[in-house]
Length: 631
Image (cartoon, one colour):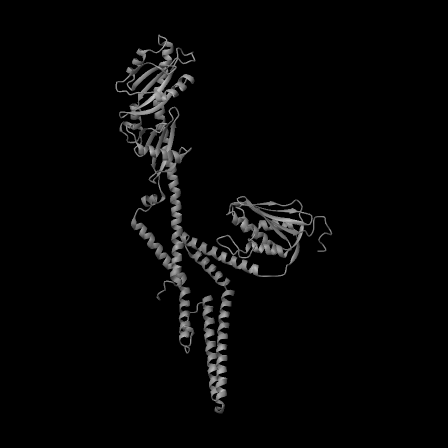
């Protein structure tokens, strides 16, 4: 088989088929993996939210139980204590009964300490919280759960409770201030932390209380890195309770949070976010051999299709090119039909025309040579004149050959241009036949044939638009009922399911005198332009408004609108803002309206939609027997 140049038709077709076959597979595969990843991340987030709620419940129950202990103690002492106010013996007893109490103080309602009971190692101080304690307990009469402090490798929580002489008394007589060791809370959290998730617990002031893997379940030492992570998480989550965040090291994490209402502590549960490529290489491609087999199969398929489709085109063209080159190199070379491959298609027609042209040129050349010989054998006495005439004849011959060649080339170009629809029809029929032969189990081939059909229709549409705009014919005017005419156009116009087409006609219908086919094409172009602008999603409204002498036909859409700088150019031929298109759709509309001596106006708002208004002269109104008849 003949070798192909790297810049030839076959390598280019092979490259295009490879891209068309491989790129959509990767795009669709990546899209499917992205959807699966989002679903997987959502499921993992739901589990994280459940874990965060369980940890928050453990924190709330632990703190609430402690708070209820002291609230019940103060309430019972108020009515059953046997003396008016809590004394030293009461708080000593309370601390002995609760080993996690490291310090307990009794203050008067002005915040002055009356007496206390404390562990020898306690470094308790409530000075920073005194104002909040007085406001919450004395003024509001509520329990106070304060800050968390870290002292000598242990975590402590501050609580305060109002004390009254009896339960019916509203004024507060004093305050019970307690410092609790959070060791029991840490053990509860340590037992509840899941092994496959990370968890963090922070106080309202940002102090880290606990985290997964912490000794005794508590952050016994400051953790600046984890505190920095909590700031990143809080800033990116905002008001959300769960979502994906990016930490300072650019890693993606799924985070669920829960807040403990009584203490305003925050629980974060984290795990790494799953990415589409990680999902692909981690689970989809399970074997290198499988991947190699897929790639090899795709390459074989592309090569077979390329040879099947392209070789019947490139081989006749190659032989035609070789014959033309030999004809150029040797003027005596006689091209024979056996030297060319002449298939039964447009390429065969081109080869036949080329063969006839070469034969005709050779015959003319032989005739000219014979004429030259005859002239040279004429009267030798007139040799000078013969030589002059011979030179003139040679000059004339060269011009004749040049003219013949130019005419033949022009004829070839005319045939190719005129017959451009025929190759499209042949390609369409061949693609349809192959599509019928191909097994339905080959969705990739079916998709490619679908693309071929779409592109053929696109090419035919472009040819129709260009010919339709270039062709000029006399108007065939007929009087039509406008509302019925527009309804027929709407009913016959194909639209995608995402677009809703509404009618908004005036109650009374008028008759207009127009070229029905030309005006129908103009209105269909407006509807098609509106559908393309809305990208197959929105509402198109077609309607009429009747004036005294003119009627307005409008086509409105809910698309993106037309920018001001583009509005003045849209009726110009070959102007378009689309990636594909001839730019003749609205030019045909403008031409049709102008030929009917009408007017066209545009109302458009960017982001809201566009309304095209066509104004035509009324030929006849209902009940009118004279208006327009003389027109």
